[in-house]
Image (cartoon, rainbow, N blue to C red):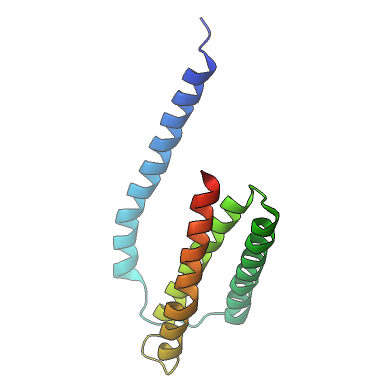
Length: 131
């Protein structure tokens, strides 16, 4: 006997939710390993490319969110959600990588005055347009 479409979707959702939950839980011991084994400092190659790439993603995400919002395009929700996540990540890495340096104050100001408020705005756009 064939399963009805809603039952198939439900089973797929249950499987997917189990995989995602398991992946999240599997990260917990990995985080403990990293906390004990990561060096306090490290020299990084292509540092500028990494930060410029992140800022390029932010520029595309913010501009894309604005354009899609103005057009009333329903695709604005996932773009705004992704942009909010990138802004949170950018604030986190700016503040944590500047700790103990002369740039820490500026990183905190930018996080509190720009990145976190913009992330909040994008999250609101994502939530309102998703419903």
